[in-house]
Image 1 (cartoon, rainbow, N blue to C red):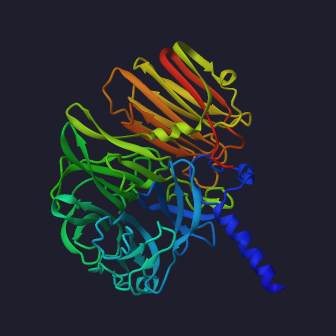
Image 2: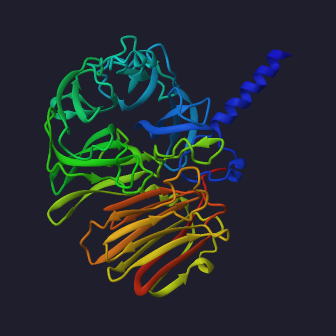
Image 3: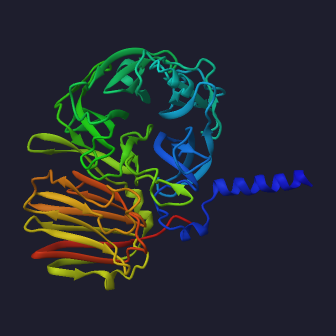
Length: 504
């Protein structure tokens, strides 16, 4: 009898792991189209790879509590980066340590030798964090290891020769991002090493040689460097290399954030065009953002939608944290300088429901869009264009008196998100604030794309030149929507679309 009961409990647990039930609709603050784990703690996205028509998202996960703990790699899969299905845990801690952040690649040439019977191995490269060695304060408690899968990521085998890259004595020595460098037929590993990036190379993902380092005298250094990424984008026929470096703390609006550098990479050295700091996202809630591997010419990026300032305290249950929507990355030139852009992936259109369009909408004072939206969920996308002539703001509100204000201050030439009165804010003293971002574009027209979920807003201004991501925790759905301009603006084209939930 006990055995039967045990099997019943196991079956129930498996169902709970694989499915996101309709009851989640009742869970306060549960994102409706951003990935969040069914229960417990999540942070950095890891091992993001596209393989055989499936997007794989691995993530830092602690299955025993909703605060940070011994790290595992959780796993979720999707056909479109929008609807995600949570899978069994991929990697568990072992005698070498916790499973910290890293990346995954499809080893199509079987350089690793892990492939069998024509099956392409997926290879995960991750940091082992050894808590025993950490207590000994040798500075050698983080090192890099690998694991492989021959069944499309369902099960993983850790390499018997781990670790494959030993620590030379750097206390923060982690978050390997690996990519194939075709000109020299080798793998390049980009590693966060305390206050800089160190590059390594390998012919087989097992033996690594140090190539160079970058960043000791470049960019922002308000905190430790983490979760890097390196990839090329072709712009006007020239290959431009992008180096993303996440930093905690030291972001533009305090806490954790992501910066980037543009430059040249020859397989050994990265040489930045500028050592100045450029931010990937000026909001407070896009950290550890990295790209999917194996996606061809599309550069697809996703981040952890939280901030180390308050990630362990946000008032969600039974889970903590979500990811940003997937974003397509590009380059845009402004005044002879290149900047990274990011915009929502086109796949987001699968969520589109009802909506409306307006042309030449003149607004002076406050204009209430609520009667036209007919949307009680607060899930929507708003796109519009206007001449850069005056201040304006977009207010998401509810009948409880909560509001999130997204706007543009012409005098300061800044965008902003104000979540001072956004709902529950007392869990952390610095949460209820107004966050600002510079307007980078010099265009006389302003374009706005705003994506709103149950507990987040993502602003993409000027075709993704200025991006802001902020989370919030309202008492009720933000079902009211206003546009305000005291001086007056004319919106040339406005498009409002209600968005569907992906939770069934």
